[in-house]
Length: 506
Image 1 (cartoon, rainbow, N blue to C red):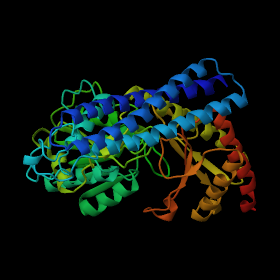
Image 2: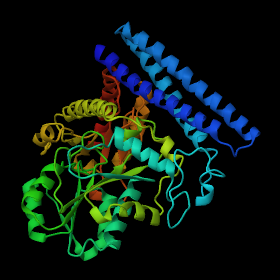
Image 3: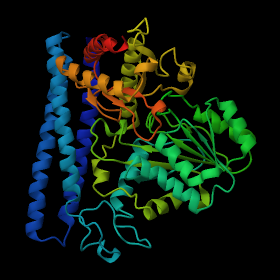
Image 4: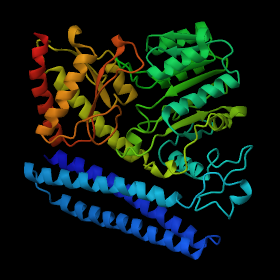
């Protein structure tokens, strides 16, 4: 019970820090509004009234959080008290989430999408953090000052690296796949891949499909995750680019010790090589290149979606990032191809991203990892006779082949896959099982949802039936930041559904 109260305190600390950020940013916006000379008195009045309304709501939430913190200090550890605390926390979260949209709206509602450079300083710019950056094409959607402002915030608070010997460059895109395609445009248009491209067959399915279509016969795939074997593959094929995931979002969920692969390659390989790393499943947990001085011949591009855990469960905007190291003469090329491919983040997007800190995000991911490991262990023992359940696939439990690697890497992932016995391991039974879970969740007042993503406050269940072949489809459970108390409810839901589901095995 006490651990559940600690969990609630952590969630409230997250909401408190983010609410303070919203208050600070709104005050900055109001100061800029007061300085603006080109707006009419009526428009300024409208903007001031909107500011007063939104800032008042945020201040009210801030005061509510402060009172809730006091209440948590003397909270009782019983079922009724916990139910009330959890309900209160969820209510505050939804208020903050609603205010995030209002905050983003008021921060950009005076802005224009495509003013000219000459108008960007005073006549049409709105209340920007920075003026529009002069470019070949001066549409705001290409080089928005608001996006650069958001990038600096994220680079400072979340994606900051240390002791690499090179300055990293961060670019935001309008989604994770846009980040990846911006990298592909760069590699192809600059003729980086003259020889071969090497890719794990266990990288994200849509990424591997794009690689096959873009590089065709130049692409070599491999299906192992042993660091030494991958380095041997690099030495034998001499690729110009290598594509890896930190944690594979595929059926068998292999882990990749990306840091070791890059460092081992750097010691013995002298030709220029690009490592393109998808860190979507672990972004914010750690920076794989910290304290590694990157040699001149090693180029590293880390990318991913930041729809997941970095949005603190709010899920307000699609967004992706590209963090590049050591690109030298190509230092601004990712930004250029982001522009040319039209994958820029809209101005409002920078305000819909909850800017968090590394510490807060790591706390969130640790809670999610704890819940994931707990649930994976529970389900791995729920069907001892293997009447229905063939395997729980999660690196954080001993049955996974990469369990020993978790301690070194530091993070096992925010989800796991459920594998039924052969006859039931298909889309039909994935759908039946998922429907029952959602139905039984209501019985126990659990917030389990049918959703494809992860890193949120609530658990989601999802079956992959998209681009992959049927034999690679899987059923995935993504745990949220639920308290230990709530986790017991979720276990009851799955236990009952598994008992009911056994009839399909007969």
